[in-house]
Amino acid sequence: MLLDTALAIGIVLKRLRKEQGFQQADVASYIDASDRTLRNIEHGESGTKTRTVLKAASELGLQLYLGQKHGETAITVSCFTDIGRYVQSIRKVQNIRQEDLAAIVGIQHSVLGRLERGDDSVSIGTVFNVLKELGIELNNHKL
Image 1: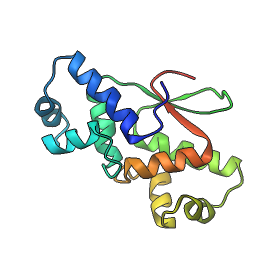
Image 2: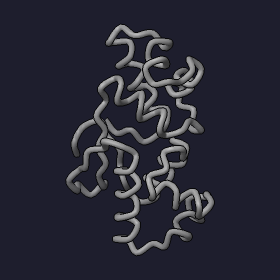
Image 3: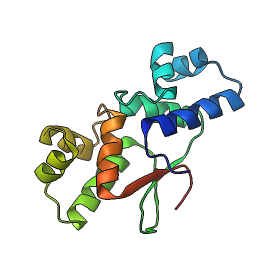
Image 4: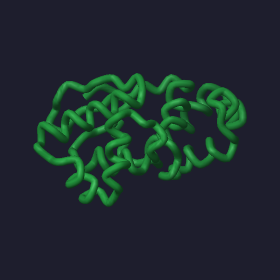
């Protein structure tokens, strides 16, 4: 399934949580977050830190893959650094300067730099905007 928004990943995480018989408070405790934060993730709050979303995905057994829409072999996302490195490599292949991509997406150049370096405090909404602009898909199955 294509996970192209914070809401899409939130819906999948909520479904997995319920299938596994967990309450929001259980998962929130496991990922060291508040109940409200988990509720925000499940409702697609785009300002949630990517680190927290990835912790929830890992805790619930959701495997994530990155790939390009053109059918390129997907890579497994084991940590946020994988996303950052992949974004950087695709940006360079497409010959787009970091500052130009940041301007297109509407974020500060420093935020894109942090994302590419693997700073998982970047919001999930920002990550999805960058992925979309580069033609990168996040899926819960291999492409």
